[in-house]
Every structure is written in structure tokens, then in C-alpha cells.
Length: 275
Ligand SMILES: NC(=O)c1ccc[n+]([C@@H]2O[C@H](COP(=O)([O-])OP(=O)(O)OC[C@H]3O[C@@H](n4cnc5c(N)ncnc54)[C@H](O)[C@@H]3O)[C@@H](O)[C@H]2O)c1
Image (cartoon, rainbow, N blue to C red):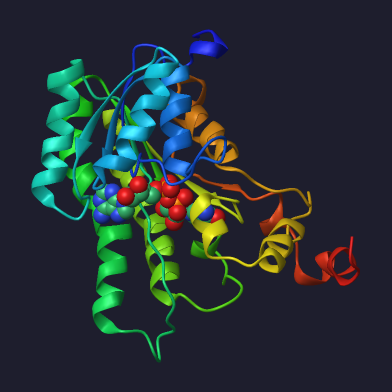
């Protein structure tokens, strides 16, 4: 078992949406995953369609003496997904871990969503998991197996609050179903497939689009009553990428301050009065 400070030593990982969306200590989820992976000894292929975002994450990793490089690509493009899998092997010799982090959202219920927007969300969030996995899995098998971690959401399991985003909910629920089937059908190849379901994480993207009141409600909505950060998500993913989780496959792990454990009535006393 590797030392807990180098739990990903010797591993090669692809992180999609690895680019920075925040600044300073306020990092994006993909950025936090990539930095933590490098700190834990992995060589990281930073995939992002925005080169400038990816360069910031790369600089963060290089400053700390980590090993990473950029591949500019779009996860909705089959050729880009093929290129990223091949680049991991040609640059670093193998591929062990794939984190499907890219995800977009936007408003719309089934009765008013724009059809083209629906298709875009499903392509970016769900079809991309198929495309990246299609080219990554055969290369992982060549190296004796691997770990795939897909970013779902609590909204893939329960309806979210605020404005409906039914395309987002459908894509995040679809990711869980797809991951379970992949876990079963590639299990004998020693490919593990798990999902993370983040709750109300205080990510840069969320902070930009929320009022102070909404941010405060998000914090109080979970039994722990504290803000979740991209680092909380990244630690759970580092565990699922490491050998420490070698016997865990086909699970969806909420990282949500206990939110999914609570019924609305259980939370009522905690939410009704100002803190
Ligand atoms: N923030 C939350 O509260 C929360 C909650 C639940 C789930 N999640 C999930 O966590 C993941 C990360 O979300 P985030 O908003 O923090 O983003 P992020 O900051 O981790 O990543 C955004 C990056 O993805 C890149 N990107 C977008 N579309 C791309 C594409 N088609 N191809 C390649 N790169 C692309 C962007 O350029 C950007 O650099 C998503 O899957 C999201 O659904 C977030």
C-alpha cells in the first residue's frame, strides 16, 4: 500500500475540464482534482477546451514541482477523446485513471427547454463519458486495469432547488446508470467505475451566478451547515483513483455534507431560523 502522501505515485491520469475557473485559493473542481492528483504523485494530462484555463492549472502544478501537461480538446469530439487517451500513453507510458469532470448546466424544464440546448447538455455531460471511456478503456486494459471516476451530482439522484434544469438532471442521472453498467461489464478487466455526487459546492462557477442569499442557503442546506469546497470533491476522487479503493466499484459517493441523508422535515428546524 503506498504512503498516504503519495497514494497516486506511478499513476497516469486524465482530468477533463482541468482548467482553472477561479483564482487564488478559490479553485475550480477540475483544477483542485488536478493539483491534488499531482501532489499525490500522479502524472496528469490536463484536458480543457480553453487553453488559458488549462495553463493556469499547469502553472499551479509546476510551481509545486508536480508533473502535468496540457491537451486542448473538447470532450464532445470523438477525435479529441481519442487523441487525449493516446497522448496519455505517448507522453507518460500508460493510462490508469480517467476523471470525467466536465459538466455544464442551464435553465429549462421539459415544458420550456430549448431542444438544441437539451442536446448540448446531454452531449457535453453524458455522451462525453462514453467518448472518453471508449478510447481510454482499451489502453487501461493494456496496463492491467484502471479507475474511472465520473462527476454526477446530487441532482442526478434528487430534484435540485431553484430554477429547474431538467437536461442537467437527466444527464447526471444518466451518468450514474452508465457508470453502474460500465462497472459490471469491465469489472473482469480490472476497470473500476465510480461516481461522485457533489452537493452544494462553493465553486467559482456557482459563486459567480449566485446571490449572497443563495450561497448562504446552500451552506445551511446540509446537516453539517458548512461550505463545501472543490477540495472536498477532489479528496474523494483521489481516494477512488488510488489503490486504497481497489475493491470499490459501481458506487455513487455523495460529497454533500449529509444532505441526501436528510428529509426536508429533518432539516426544517435547522433552516427556519436565521443562524
Ligand atoms: N459546483 C457544484 O456545486 C457542483 C455540484 C454538483 C456537480 N458538479 C459537477 O462538478 C463538475 C465540475 O463543475 P464546475 O462547474 O466546478 O467546473 P470546473 O471549474 O471544474 O471546470 C470547468 C472547465 O471545464 C471546461 N470545459 C467546459 N466544457 C468543456 C468541453 N466540452 N470540453 C473540454 N473542456 C470543457 C471549461 O473550459 C472549464 O475550464 C461538473 O461535472 C459539475 O456538473 C458541480
